[in-house]
Length: 450
Image 1 (cartoon, rainbow, N blue to C red):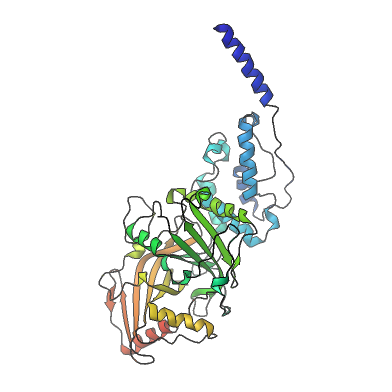
Image 2: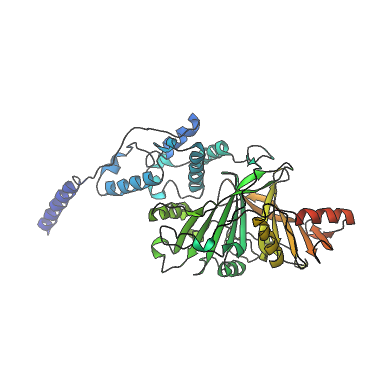
């Protein structure tokens, strides 16, 4: 027995020694174009990120031992493919900051550095103080009342042939009917000065209303529409130029290789597919990996459905009194805006008649909507709060007011009603004040869509 054990020990030692010779290379090189950040920020990145996310070769002695070396090599090469601080400086400054925002979100959600890496490399752990320092540097809203939005440049009115849009490079087809999907939530993105409206198909909306989002059911489809922010002379920030629309499609079997979700993005008014080949999907799945526990969905749906889990739904924003004459959160979105001084965000909703009138103006070179009889508009205004899933974003919080305009006949009677305060109590206005507010709502230009 002892002899057998001795022989096996010798064989094991020999095999272990031979394995040490199977050592594929980990390429390394100079820092050719580092990110443009202050020295104190770079010191944090060097300590916590450069071991995997740079061309430097910074392995501990135990990382050099096979088979652990193989795992470390795989992690390093994968990390560099996603983000390489040695070459990030070649990209525009806006892209560098966007990359830092994503990195900070990965850190605050616990996805980076990899837990299995920091278990052995304790010096790579990001301390709360270091994370706070990175956030202070990035601070999306450095001054109250300022978003850094671009000047209010009129967006071009154009219309794409939605039925002829090319499929994404992974085969995901475009969804021509997305504009009529119902709202799931809204985001004010201070990290890149954009607005996002997240819409969902009927399956997605019903799932959100029922709290059936862990996981989202097969057939769920999201459309995330992005616009550049445009600053107006009145101090409000509105949607400007259309940037892109992204789709997430849930099909556990068809997209089993990408965690049950299909991904696509189309940019510009001509809706050009984002990818250059199917590998763009790795960018999508990598970004959404930190919210795996929420079925890879960052958005907190505005819904009254309760959940035992925290921060999976935005119940506060859904708290509209049932005594209101209408429940506009189930209507279509026409536009949105932010008041940076009041720190509020508002969305203009419309019933079918109002939406049709608003969208018809997009082909009329800026003419104001001519709302027919039966049109009803609703402006819901919320306070804002930080998005718990994305540093640099703000989402709706408690409702501040709900305003309605009912059109009885074109250019004739327009009924205006407003509900505000903690319980959204009806507010009495003079005829002149009501007419002025009604005019403001009726003349709001719709956010540009292809």
